[in-house]
Image (cartoon, rainbow, N blue to C red):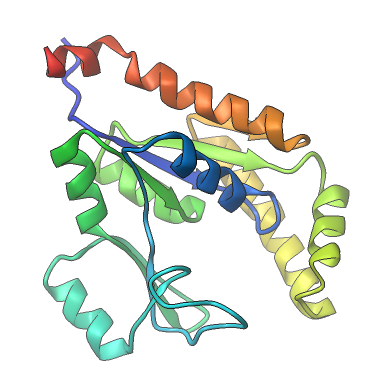
Length: 199
């Protein structure tokens, strides 16, 4: 029998501008048991970002203390700043049979999967690099060099995601993409091994 742990850990990964955060927020609305994981970071807030909403903004000393206490299920250093995913979100999903949603990159998603093999890895792919570039430009939030860097990163992220993830959703239409994402969660809730845990 395939033993599964209660609760669903759902990782959503995508290049910047592919729409994963919008999809994640819609899941939160439709699934009352869902919790959106807010990562910790040592970088400074940008623009209108708020601590506790976009990230938990902490200094390096506090981040290291949390690491030492085992409070991160995964972490990484990116461009000189630390980013980490809180273990407590995993623990709450497990203890309440909830749905934990992680909006992180492929590297982070793979680390969570290594620790929790029943994690669902879903990659959100833009219809094309041209569409992704247009979306990034339409946001009017990034300088040209930042847009070019994001496009390079996007190509690498798509390649890694398609190699290692469980599901891929092409977001060429937001409603259709969301319907596919929701169906993945509903199907996982119906998995026999999960149902047996509740019996």
